[in-house]
Amino acid sequence: MCQTALVTRTPLATGVLLAALAALAFGVTTPIVAWAGQGLGPLSTAALLYLGAALTAGLVLAVAPRAAPRLRRGDAPRLIAIAIVGAAVAPALLAWGLQRTGATTGALLLNLEAVATVILARIFYREPIGGRVVVAVACMATGGAVLAAGAAFSEVHLLGVFAVGGATVAWALDNTWTRPLAERDPFQVILGKAALGAALTTAVAVWRGEPAPTAGHAAALLACGASGYGASLYLYLLAQRRVGAARTGSVFALAPFIGAAIAWTLGDRGDGALALLALGLFALGAYLHLTEHHAHRHAHAAVEHDHVHRHDDDHHAHRHEPAFHGEHAHGHRHEPTEHDHAHAPDLHHEHDHG
Image (cartoon, rainbow, N blue to C red; front, side, top):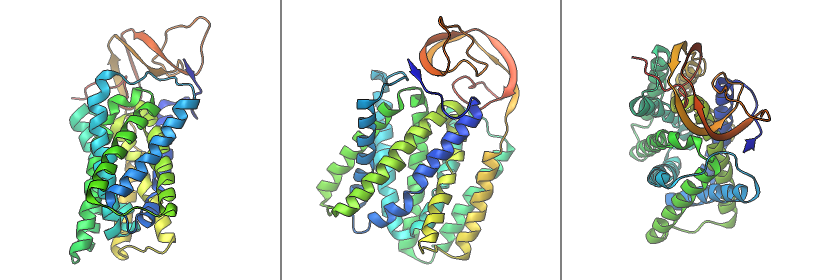
């Protein structure tokens, strides 16, 4: 089973670039969601976003050959959990919050997703966090506090800040729980998550009697779902394969800057000086994450597993007859080895760091 290799032969560089592209695909949608969601209920907005993602994934699965291992029956509980948290709760909170914070402030607050993802990846998977990452997380958390302080004198606005903050925590849980699914067919993961999330939010929206969208707003939200919640998640899953949950979440922190820049250009100036201060803190945090370097001598135990891989990454030395180049998936065995190189906490680098 083969798949064309993406962009570069270096897993670290590939993962960072894929996460940055995921951030771009998601970031451009935030101000559009803020506009298209005007007058709509948050659940209706969330349903349309993930319906767009589900339709896109379904179309790709129908026409394109797949290379990665398929979803398994045992993945169902995890898929249901990420659908509830990431495709229902998070987008509904974001849609509700954006109507009360404005697109610029709401976009900047999404940086808190990186903070929560780093912390949860450490708790769940023991991914390493060095001093550089600690400073980066502190900068981003302070930036969020600055934006919350700017809203402290307006109860409704402050509730919007808390809603967007809640969305980032929900998506951080989603990111963390999704990591074991990163080795599966990404379009199957997207279709399952998005379809379940859209069905759930649609049912609750109908029960609550939320207003129906106009054709133009519905089309805009479906397009945002295809790009920011479909294509973006595909790229995000590919990045997680290579660099783990924490680093992917860190690079994904570029998304809020893209959304805030677009919203600022369109006239949403946020909270003035406080928004600029928060922007500086978030930018510093993102820079520290992006420039992190992790290398040391480490050992790999013998293991046998099935996942997407290539043979020029210093970890897959088994042979094919005839020789095979590029990405592909099949069951294979690794012999014990020990070496020293720059790496991220991917499937092959889950070793302990004391």
